[in-house]
Image (tube, rainbow, N blue to C red; front, top):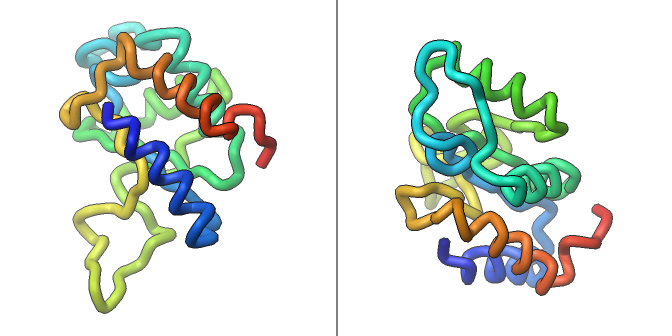
Length: 145
């Protein structure tokens, strides 16, 4: 994962006085190992994943956007499962809080600040723990917002 993205996002939030950061979060190979087919049991890819996702969910200034090509039935199952672990998903595949502007059309590409996706280089075995360490290093982990 490009951890500069994380540092820059929190720096820009402070400098530009943004109210919210948006996390675009993939599912397969990021939160859960591999693919979910049929009645496969859902399980987290790591304990650090649970910790960081709970932390994101606990912050009033962070929105989690599930970024997935899964079908509605699977998405519903995943959201319900995450909810049992106190991980709240705000939106799925779109961000209604960031509307189109004269310079940007967000209908097909949701606005986000932080991307967590194995297709973008996120390596869940090491990067969930690294994300937590970066948040601690930034002084964000213990902030109550």
